[in-house]
Length: 73
Image (cartoon, rainbow, N blue to C red):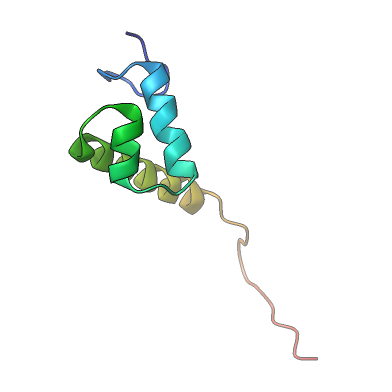
């Protein structure tokens, strides 16, 4: 049961990808738990980790660096 997306995970890659698709489609944890067949609490934990990962990636991606000048015209 190897999962290249989540290190030391007990979930199979297939189940993790199902959960990820549900996350992207903005489905709630109840529906995702029914689709994937794992508990709602586990889905909730995975969703929380995915949200934290998205935030960390967006923080690293700084579109502006240095001083930003505002045009007053």
